[in-house]
Image 1: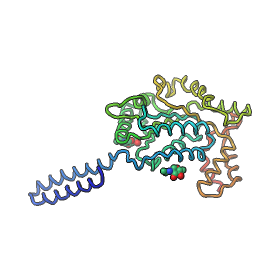
Image 2: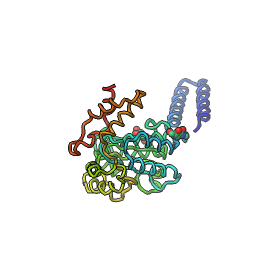
Image 3: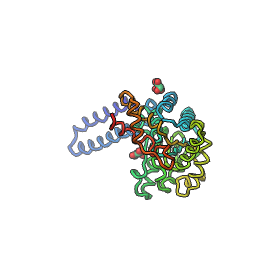
Length: 329
Ligand SMILES: *[C@@H]1O[C@H](CO)[C@@H](O)[C@H](O)[C@H]1NC(C)=O
Ligand SMILES: *[C@@H]1O[C@H](CO)[C@@H](O)[C@H](O)[C@H]1NC(C)=O
């Protein structure tokens, strides 16, 4: 319904209200009650089911490419795969299945951040868009009950019914109950529709630490061999990911493995001292503070490095940089 029609309806309802005033009080009250209920419903429906709103969903491939290049630190594999996957999917008006991305790696390496970059370049309101939904197992589904399962299914169904181009981000996927993951499996697959709803234009993004040990070990081996990190390729990490992720019976993949609806498993590499410096410089720049190399180095020295990696990699990537920059500036 467009605004003009809503206005017309409002007008009709209000005129009806005036007309009934001529009758006895009981009729007036009950009619007014009926009218305001109907009016309330109309306004509610108007704002709630406004559909996809094409003006607020415009994919910007150039913007995504630029953001990945300039804002996501030293994740050449993730940048490449994500740009290709998202661009391909968004340029297809009739995809066969929803896009399902599974992002893996240590914390602070940019998994949530990249989800935000994707949202920023698809939805005008980015993460604040009403078409973007973030679920955290502990926050949204703490009970691991049937109620949670039902709720999640209804949310996905309701939102995709309202707008096919919806995006769902599942944080801490490795902490999700297997039952919950099972319950969303049908939406991720090749289906024309399910109960009349098509999920094929939706995007699902799973974030997890699963496979982090394998990724860290591979990156460390590369580092020790004196090889350039940029030479690491997806295939170098795919094996590692599948061994550490798929063979783990407790991991969420054992539940997803049989049909494997995940389109891309994307590794995020651990970050070194020099990358932490870059993060700190970028943080200052983003705040409009002149980037100060001394401060950035101080921040990077303050970060904890993983002894198991001979202190090559930061334990929390660039996660705590913001508060440390606060402290030193
Ligand atoms: C797409 O992103 C680029 C780079 O951020 C920007 O310059 C351009 O204006 C954007 N285009 C649209 C249509 O928003
Ligand atoms: C859409 O998802 C949100 C959670 O992000 C939920 O609160 C809302 O009820 C869902 N909408 C529908 C129509 O199901």
